[in-house]
Amino acid sequence: MKKIIIKAGIVGASGYTGGELIRLLISHPFVNLEFALSKTKKNKKITDVFVDLTDETDIYFTDKIEKKIDVLFLCSGHNKSKLFLEENHIDKSTRIIDLSQDFRNDNFFIKTKRKFIYGLPEINKSLIEKAYNIANPGCFATAITLGLLPSVKNNIIDEDIYTNAITGSTGAGIIPQENTHYSWRNNNISWYKPFEHQHLEEINNTLFIQSKRKNNINLLTYRGPFTRGIYCNSYFKSNKSINEIIDLYKKFYEDTAFVKISKGEIDIKNVVNSNKCLIHLKKVNDKILITSVIDNLIKGASGQAIQNMNLMFGLDEKSGINLKSIIY
Image: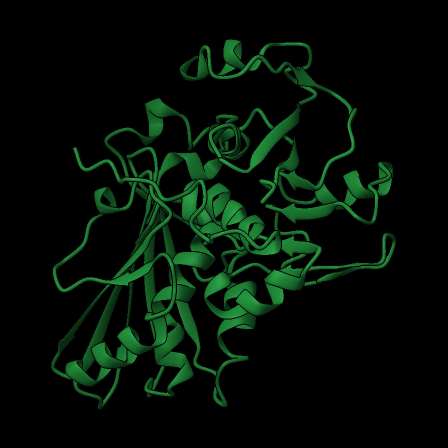
């Protein structure tokens, strides 16, 4: 049987997300990385920008699409994917996986007649397998949604949901800002976009299509003094016992590749450098506490994008992303 080889390209390849995609794709057993587009790094060798990849690839960054490909990853940031697709002709046979938020809430791009499927495999696996265009979920949206999905689906939440989530500095992108660069962020913590984070829209759209009722989500997000990972706590009142809830979660995620229910308390280090989402459940009095953790660059971005690619091309879901976490 002939081995399938997927020809892939990346747009916006020199940022944190693009860099992770390069690292994962060049070691993927069924992928050839054909090009990595970056206007800021054009004509530079990838290994001169990402020194950790020395001797692993001889590709140079380019500023244009030069080869026919099977799948294109868009990593240029929010509001840039639509512009790129308007300005560049992409063959209809080329599958697109967009890592910005451009198509997560408005999934039909009329100018190219492309319809995007929300790429959360834990609920849309069958749709992703048939899709040509994927809107990859946001990092906060992934961690929060996966933590809450079984509770919402089974209508066990009586009142409002309260969520606190803290992310590493890579979530802010590679270009330093006044309150995101090392000198300010190190040994520091601060909230941002309280109760109005941009991922709330896709969280609500994804969660409450699963339920007959809609609970208000009070989301408070924080900048953490670490590099990568998202640590999320959601809590609400419920009359269900903790054993009932644990059983609901285990049943809901029993056939998923990367979402696991942990008996013990969990930390960010349990998932860094992996495509896993770990979930821990606890009840105190009438309150349920759900902790969910992911690596924001892997399950929250590049790893999930490859998970979606695997499904689109009929590969094992874990191909190229069955990674080991870094504990210490």
